[in-house]
Amino acid sequence: MSLIQNYVVSKYLQSQFLMEKLPNTLQNLHELKFVDFIKELNKSNKKFRMDATIKNG
Image (cartoon, rainbow, N blue to C red; front, side, top):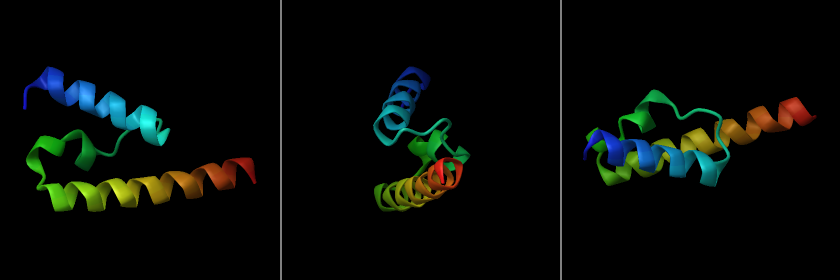
């Protein structure tokens, strides 16, 4: 995956999951297997939801 493609996919994920910044593991998604990518995405999404709940709480 080229740097441009990686950037576009990263920005897309940030917008879809309303994350301020993607974790390093997801920024290097071209190095992950699909199963590992999904696990990291779920983990990041859960963490973001908890952070948002605390901030708005």
